[in-house]
Image (cartoon, rainbow, N blue to C red; front, side, top):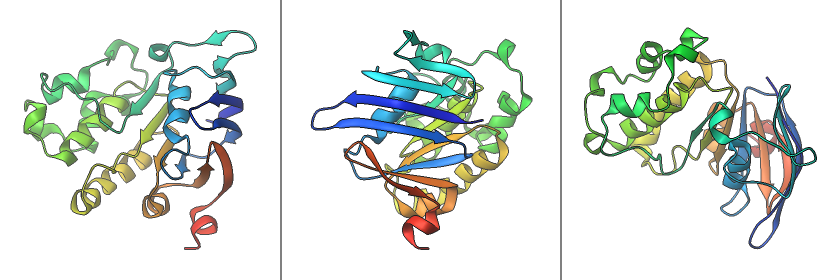
Length: 224
């Protein structure tokens, strides 16, 4: 599955996000400092923001085309989004958070079934707990599980380890590798950590001030 980002132009506060990319790899890192436009790009792909000009296509499925007026609603894009703040519902149990927005009747691939997702992310022991009783690492796994249970065509991860300390990052990284290896879904992984890119991603897109500064493998970009 290939993601095409054609002539994206989005005016931001101090600069313009301007991209033209084809992303054919399984896991692509969107790398750069704060304010480079990384989260804005994910919001455009997810349908949470509208560009002044853009064509966004996932294989043959057109998500956005400002030239023809196509703007598929976010809820219909089948894109799993893991935001920085996780956006879990504190008044719901882990199980109910996981099942929010999940429609078993639409499930076409058992890999995205409840039993498989909770097994891969090792969540069965906490299903009946409240969110407020979870550790930061457990919350992150619940957020990943909720995104996977939407049977996504594309998974967007916005700095999923940024709020965790070094110990928790080391605990969660193997779960991110499991998601990469167990689920046949392309992933855009936003980060400013070269170590995460090297551990998880096939290609790196380096953004600076809304434009692509360079792209390549992690070894080519970071020299490791």
